[in-house]
Image 1 (spheres, rainbow, N blue to C red):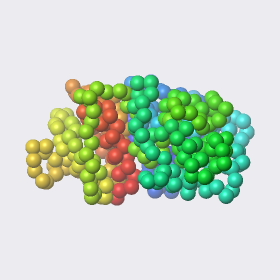
Image 2: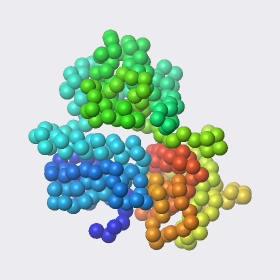
Image 3: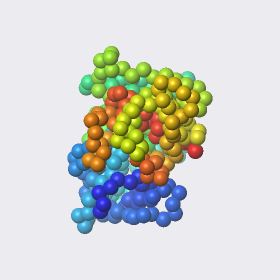
Image 4: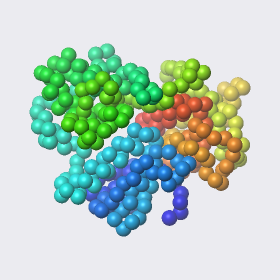
Length: 335
């Protein structure tokens, strides 16, 4: 109604979408019924915002949602489409109905299997893989998954492995990366999961991101820090009350969940801090019209729980993705 964007906690039900102002709220601010609805993705109605999809209700009311990154948007769209299809077909939608649909034995504990797969020493190795001029970070092939299941004696043969891997995929323990695996997950193949070396997958909390090929000059150097610091580096920040942009050194801390910023020339005391608990962070292509400036490309926006908007610029698309992923993790787990 007011053409403004606000962070909401969104819950997908079998027959609708509820949205809350905060995760802890007991009652929703509103609800969108899915019966008779259609979904459009990617949505180009907002050229300055990335990863937007549109849900049009039966009464022709348009609702727009923005995810934080491509894979998150695709996951929401995929599940909403499934819910709408179940309503149209008179079926009951549930994301975790895989065990019955493919006759998975009750003795198999998918949660425990998932933890074994993620074991740093004995689990599936996360790699940087390249395909179609894109680099997929923190992922692995479908063949590697089946190979691991065979070697760990979780299955008797590769056919059983496909069934088990499909269960992990459909229940959210694995996510598809790339067109080949995504197409199979959406029902365009004989099985949801593919035992192929060019079908890529990743763990949902692994820090996966995809980027285009870059030259050596574009490579982002990452440093690891111990203790409470998760990530630090220089970003361009817009002044909170003024439109000027300045380079600041940012330090991301896990607990408490704060993003402190400093004068890059020196000084131990921070110039300010952004409280990240409950925030929403998203990539944006351009600034709002009311805040137009010369800064463009690799921008991202942080909307705090108190609905204060911060705009930052990274040096590259890959660096922006890294910051978004790191901030999301801290916002979810920190205090």
